[in-house]
Amino acid sequence: MTTEERHQAFSKGPSSRVVWVEAFYHEHTRQYVIYWTDILDNFGPVNNIMKGPSVLTRARDSRGNEIEPRCIKHYHDAVLEVVVGDVFSLGAEGFASASSISRSATPDTDAAWYVILACSMHYFDEQ
Image 1: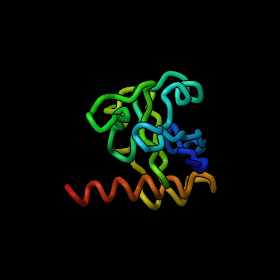
Image 2: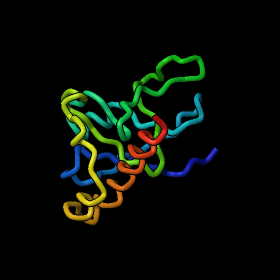
Image 3: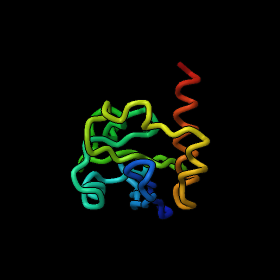
Image 4: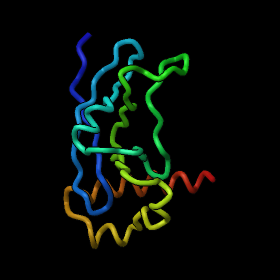
């Protein structure tokens, strides 16, 4: 089976540029994953990865067991946030408003923060 090359977008917060880390196809679970070692190699010590307000768990197989080596699932068209400290220290100010995006973002992060904003708005609409 031939698989296409995929990458996952990451940032370390609203003032950080978006960087791309290669995702790999995991044959056994038939999903794309990003290996934890690749995240650590690019960002140093990492406590968590977040998608909007959600903390991501490690990728798992159909039985609920963590995939080895450790990895996270690939999220197409999403920018995942790398969290070095406590996730609760981010507070509500960790989520940008639409007006702050257009004033403070650079072209390479503007679209990424709209994705994060859309994910967080969708999450709170469902609550």
